[in-house]
Length: 431
Ligand code: DC
Image (tube, rainbow, N blue to C red; front, side, top):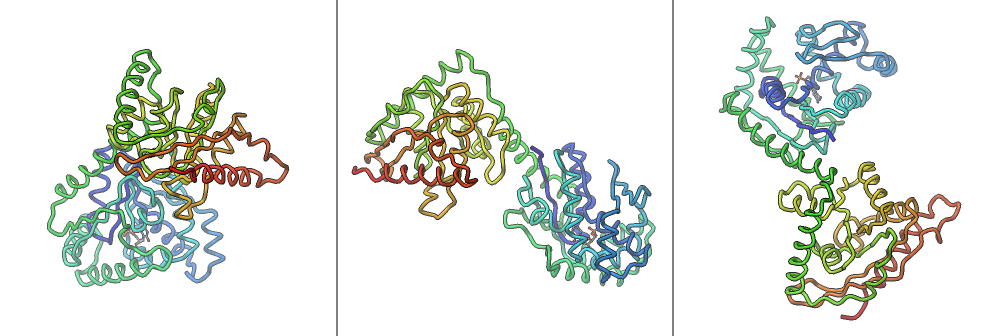
């Protein structure tokens, strides 16, 4: 899974200097997404296309070839256009071109494709909000207009671009307004982006600030990736798991008066899926710790972000899953576990009290049960989990999803509905 850093913000905030430096420091591929819009603009200007000629623009977008090398040299249809795309005529028109829906769709697609499978840092306007809304690091870099004017004039001088101070100021204000009012992907700070005002900071200070954030998140990202690599099942690991399980089970019994009903339903020699109600963050522990059978739960991969939880995750071989994606790695791990006749714990609600929150019930359990030809044991939970209160874990009769298998493609939804219905029934048991 790629590690993605998004650096967004208005023109002239230092993104173009800071981003390549960070790319080098952290060995990330650097992508200047603004340059992709500049390449399209250059081609449209060269072909004297009116920006209203949608059909013609669509045709051009089909054939256009934009690429770049590790030194951030840009190639348009095979020709090096690094300098040309910074020219006054491109700069004056790029904002307008970047507002065209067809251009945006094509460029976002290109930016995603070029990033595929890579650890990458992208600078732009809509990276954290639109291109990669799930980026690992999101920075919104800002600076006052006056500071940005000063910087741009210096930059232009170095690059031999002739523009007066007034022209630079007008261009920055014009582009700010245009970028922020872009109807398709307006420039705005993503909710989870970190805001940095670089007006009074040196480049080095900005780099240091962002570096700290990247370092922290890269460590978390690496831990999450390691969640997919199970540590070896040595005798020592099994012994440690047994000890930790014993201690934690003891603690569980101190804090809750636990009653188990029908737990013998999971004691088979076969692979089995335990589908439980999800009421809080420690209900899975109640199933894993308080049964003799070794049970592996499936949990959101974020669990491995945290050192201590990651340690427990590895000890209990918890299978990570990325939400809202078809996480093939995770599915393969689950199928392998079931083939090895293991017991898997899944929360079909996906999130705590999903039913109560009207969340869609996930049909992954029914899918896995069908693929691995194993049964599902529904589990109801009744209890508030207030300290020293009673909690009932009610294990139901195993369900064979094949009983629901019909030619209709939505049989899996019906099976999932039935499983959830039984979980809710089992949760109604009197305390
Ligand atoms: O960063 P720059 O000045 O090279 O960007 C050129 C133009 O492209 C700018 O007007 C905003 C637009 N742009 C965009 O709309 N989305 C991006 N991700 C990057 C740039």
